[in-house]
Image (tube, rainbow, N blue to C red; front, side, top):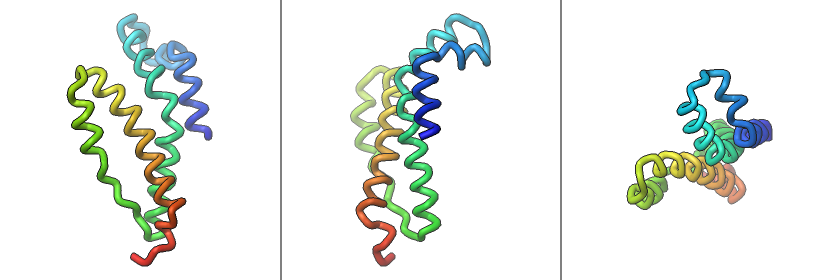
Length: 111
């Protein structure tokens, strides 16, 4: 929840965060566009990371290899859109996939 709150704040006020690193207008513009699209998905990244390490500790690691289809589909877009959309989608997919695996009982199946 903390990561999602930080992401939403960064998306709402990107200049406040980016201003800590510089004042170049091009950097502020590009960084703001990125944060508005990707930062709202930070909670999914935190969820996925938390469940990934918890799954390792439980000895019930869920398979994570479905990124190839998403990447191939996105390759048709311009490279900047590929990166921005890919990162955002990857964070959502990562968190949702691990949440589904853990909720589906992967921790309680025999290895």
